[in-house]
Structure formats: structure tokens, C-alpha cells
Length: 364
Image 1: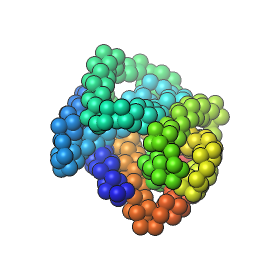
Image 2: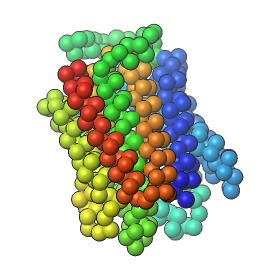
Image 3: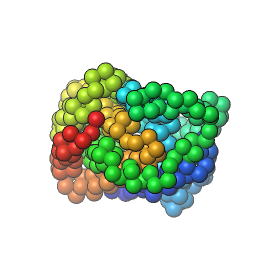
Image 4: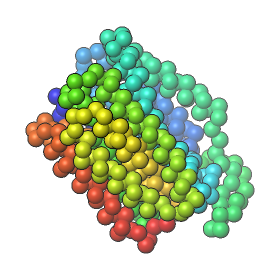
């Protein structure tokens, strides 16, 4: 049932929460390159365990836990690794591009994997494809990744420095600085609420459409993939718009308004045509919203505290995904689809606006 499925998915996010804070320390001790390599190795090992888990739910859950560790490490590593190459005022577009990684997964996953399952009648080939992809990306990362050989002063002038491991640039006590930074607090709290709202809808939207609109699972997944495609586009566009206008907070609020709209109607309508509008709303909210929060963090967090700030943001992101995924499954099972969306996703999105307004004068 929906509640059981939600807990299988939740193991991934639980481990993402657990390893968010250690990730910053791991980066400091081992450096960015080794941290990412370890994350990809965990992903490959977890995938292999999943393939060979058979009907063993405990083994499958362990495999999901290993994949969650990988998620936790990579989610923390991304922002500081990318931000190091750009001045703070120019980080909107890079964060918009970084923010599409989840959306791209939602594009490829439902369409490709559902098609593979329909054609092959087994889920193991899906896991094997992911394992091969992870191995390829490990090689690509080792060949292409380099640490930035410069930094920026307060006027955003570029300062050259000798290449060094990323961890050596992270000062001690950065968690205290991160927790005291308004940009970190605003982005983290808003991310918790936003991810809770998004996962409450996104994870179960194909199931709702499949069960209530008399369409195939592939067609149902097209809606999620369509929203993800729109999310990729809007994440990049709104990231660039943030750099050009400097109105990151205002853009964030606009994206949340679209989130409120689709959350209210997504689990009510049985008209497939309405989902064309919902797809656009999903793209703006789920593509642009997180991109703006990444940008707020990247622009407003002290440079030396950015890994710690990223860890805080990643923890809240995973916690939000966990809460949204588990709550909606439980509520839907007991009270129905519309009630789940109206009592979980809608209030969470509304609170994002409240948080943004509270920190309005303290955040760039």
C-alpha cells in the first residue's frame, strides 16, 4: 500500500539526513575529490546489493541505505564545489544548473525505467543500468574534476592561490558561523518546508493519475516527467534572472505561489487536460524554488562556512523529503488523496512564504 511504499522510499532520505552533517567534516578531512569518489562507490555497492536482494526486504533496505549515504555526501559537496568557481553575485545561474539534478532524474526515471519494466517484466535491469551509469560517472569525475585555484575577496575580486585540496580551505568552527548566518537559516527552513510539500505531491502523482484517470502507468509518468522537464527549463531561466535582477527572494515567492496552485488541484482533478497546466506549475515551483534557495545560500553564506551551510541545507532537504513522503502516504491511506494534499502540501508551501518574509531584510 501507499504507506509501505513511502517507507521504502524514506530509507533513502533518512540516510541522507544522517550523513548530511558528517559530509562537511569528511570534505574537510579528505578533500572534495575523495568525498565524491566515496559517494559514488557507496552508490555502486548499494546498487549491486539491491540487484541481488531478491525478495529480501531487509537486504533491499540496506541497499537503499547505502544509496542514501551517497545522496547525503553528494548533496553537500555540490554547492561548495561549484560556488568556488564563481563570484557570489554570479552564482544564481550555476545554482540553477546545479538545481536541475533532481529534475533530470524525474525526467529519465519514470519514462525510461517504467518502459524497461514494461518491456522486460523485471526491475533488476533498471538497477543494472544505474550501476553502469554510476561507474561511468565515477570515471568522468576522476578525469574532469579540478579544485578551484583561486578565491574572491569582499569586493568579488579574484585572488589567485596555489591549487590545494578543498578541505584545507575550510576553517574550524564553521558550523557556528553557518548557524548564525541569516541566509543559511532562511534557505534551510524554507527548504525543509518546500521539499516536504514537493515530495508529498511528486512521489505519488503518477499513482494518483494511474488509479483515477484510467490511463497507463507510462502515461501517468509522463506528467511527472513533463513537470521535471519544465523544472529544468525554469531552474536555469530563473537562476539567470536572479543574477540579472538581484530579486532572488521575490522570485522565490512567485515560485511558491505556483506550488500552492498545483498542490491544491493535483489530487482533485480527473481531467487529464488540466495536467498540462499543472505541469507548468510544477516546473516553476519545483525547478525555480530550490534553485532560489541554493542561490540564497551560495550568495549569503560566509565562504569559509559554505560546506557547513550546505550540510545544514542538505539535512533539511532530506528531512523535508522524508516528512513529505511518509506523511502523505499515511494520510492518503486513511483520508484520501485530496485531503493529503490540502493538509500537507498546501500549508507547507504557504509557510515558505512566511519564512521568506521573516528573513526579507536580512538576506540578499
